[in-house]
Every structure is written in structure tokens, then in C-alpha cells.
Length: 504
Image (tube, rainbow, N blue to C red; front, side, top):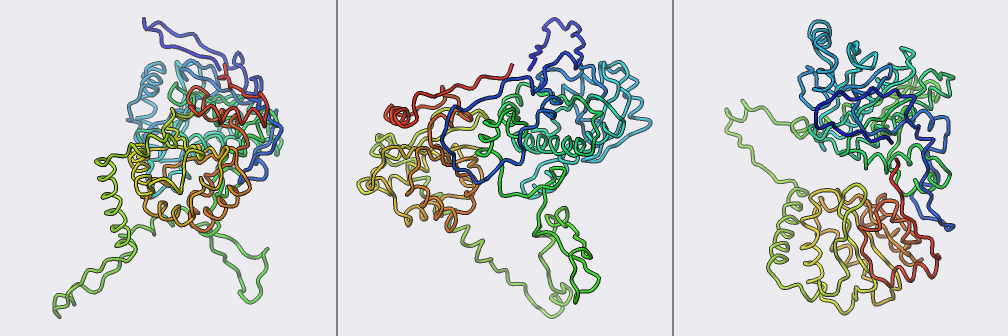
């Protein structure tokens, strides 16, 4: 990856030909030096090593307006009026002709679509303008589909015009509330599937796809690129721990929801798989889940004339949620006022730096948690006191089961009670739960608990046989753990710790 810095004197930056940049396939893979198996929810990677595709990918941090390519991608809004430093540079360097063409010939672009203009004074030949979606958790599926279509349409347009190179910017934007890591997954998955599809069809015109990132996104793409474009079999195996699971994707990487499809057949008495077609209702289903869509009322005129009164009722589920929130608020107030040094002094639960995505890492040392001796009420209060400020955004937990015994094992009843007390934000924003040095008991308990009591976090739990696996997602300098854990790890796995280097 080539680093390009802003010139403080405002001097003209050099034009960079894409042929001078190193491809992703020419960079060194991150090898995890282990010989034991890792527990994962995926049996095999859907993105195996493909050296041909790796040679087409270029990971580059810098200014997209410097690149001499056939086309660059410009992320904007529907009316081309969005102001950002990238847009400002594109308009400034392309000259007034670009603004004139947009105002007179194009005028607007819908979310997920791509429109093409000349690049004028830019080193590139063409500009692909596209509009990223606004992200709303309520309509997450629609946002993911729209972002997928942005990347898909840009790449297909490049193949349609028989271009040899294209520079893709990060289309999703925090201004539109799109989570950067989720956007990166969509981008990389779509790029991989489109390139694969074209390669399988013998279309090899597109030779270079430059992923142009800025400093704020570089760390995310450095971590996620090996998942979708592994450079070695070891990177492919390591990707099993981090690839999203629990969702289905189509041939081009688009999200697919089998439960949101209906079948249409000509004769219901003679069902033939070849004669039935499937209609995907995914794009419309989220709208139907809107309460304003589903709420139905009687005849209001009749109610007024006959004196009927609408008696509001509270849904039992909502009532339960209100009760749980009130209980949590009471516990939070206690956690902030009561003396919890009895639990905090044990040192079994604490925050230790951040992972490579910048997410807080919470460490839980199982050996120091004496379930039968500790005050469980205060333990719950301390858990809330520590985590409440962190769970407002994404976070991860690393649980170390090293050298534990029966006195450290909590009951399933207590775990279920704690899980039910904690609000939804704890489950939603938990992005990964790593169990280091698991035993057969741990795996059985984890399977039982996540299957029957906490299915919402099942796909987020990963068992790791050694500390070194954490270094792929957490830099060693950000991970503070007791010495007995590393000593135990070295005694069973040997001196094989590693420190992943940044791609340069």
C-alpha cells in the first residue's frame, strides 16, 4: 500500500499510474503459525485463495484524484450537492465542465444507481457517480441491498465499457449513518463475487480494481481484505473465525432471505420444481414491518356517532420490555452509587485497550472468578458499571478459560438471569466473544447456552486454542492479560507468538 500525504504548501500532487502500484497478490500474507484446529461456525471458507483475483486487487491509501485509471467512482447524493473533501477535490480538479455536464445532462442519480460522465482535467478518463444509502437499523436490509448495488453496478459498468482499470472509493458514509465495518464487508464481498463471475465467464478485460481508502478506513480494510481475498491457505483458514455467518448471499454477493420468498406454480396439484418461480420480497418486507403499516383501526366516524371509545391496550411484549428497562435502570443507579471494590479488586473483569477496528476489548479471567465465594449481586452490579458506557457502541469480549476448575463455573440459571437482565444493546453491539483455551465442558456449555438461551449471540462466539489467534484482531500492545495465561499457552503450544505487520 502506497501512502500519500497532503502537501501543506498546496502544491500539485503527482499523477500515479495504476501500473506502478503493487497488487494485493504481491503483498505478504499474515501467517498464523499454529498447527492445531480452530473451532468455527463455518466448515470451509466461501472465499478460497484465488491468485488471479488477488493480482487484480490494489489496496491503496491516498487521493483518488491522483490516479491514472480508466474510471474513478465518486460517492455523492441524489442531486450531486453533497459536500465532502473528496467531492470538492474531484470538482476542483476536473474543472467547470464536469459541473456543467451534471447540471445540464444528468441532474440526479438514485440510490444504488451509477451514472457516467467524462473526467475532463482529471488523470482518469471517466467518473462513475453513485449514491450510497442512508443507514437505518429498522431498514438495514434495504440499506445493505442498496450499497451492494452501488458496487455491483459500478463494476458491471466497467465490464460493459470494456475498461481495464477502475478506482473504487468507500461508498458508504458515516454521514449517512452506515457502520464502516459493515460497509466494508458488503464492498469486499460484492467485488469478490463480481470478479469471480466475470472470470468464470471468460471476461478478463478488467485488470485492476483499486480500493482507494482514507486513513479512517485503512485499518478496517487491512483486517477484512484477507477474509475475502486470502493470499495463502493459512489466511483462508484463519478467515473462518471472522467471516460473517448466519446469512445467505446470492451469486453476486447480494443478501438473500429464503423466508422472504414465495413460490408461484401453474398447477398446485402437480408441483414441479422446474415449473415454479420464486419472487423475493426482501426489498418490500421491511416496509411491512413498520407499525404504521400494520396498525389497523375501525371506522372512526362510527366510533364518534355511536359513542364508541378506543381503549388503548399495551402489548404484553412491550409491557415486559418496559419492566425489564425499569429494572435495569434501578440496577444501573445502584452500580453507580454502591461500593463495588469487593468485586473490582479481584481483577477478573476489566477493559484492555481496543481491537484493530478501534472497538473496546473487555477481558474476563475465568480463574479469578470464584462463583461460589463471590457476592453475585455485586458481581452483576460491577458488570453493569463497567460495560454500560462501552456497549453504546461496538465492543468485543475475550474470555480466558485458562486453568479453571469447578469453583469457577457459573450455573446456567445465573447466566440466563444475567442475560435476560441486560438490555438489547449489550447483545446487538457485541461483535465477537472469544473463548481462549476452551475445554470440553466449555464447548458443551457454550453450545447449550447459545442454542437454547441466547441464540442472538451464537454466531459471535469463537473458541480459540491459543492466545496468538487473538493477535489477528487485537494488537499485542492492546491486550493486557495475567502472566499465568501466556505461560500456560507457551507450555501447550510452544513459543509461536506473532505480531502481524501492516501492509506497506
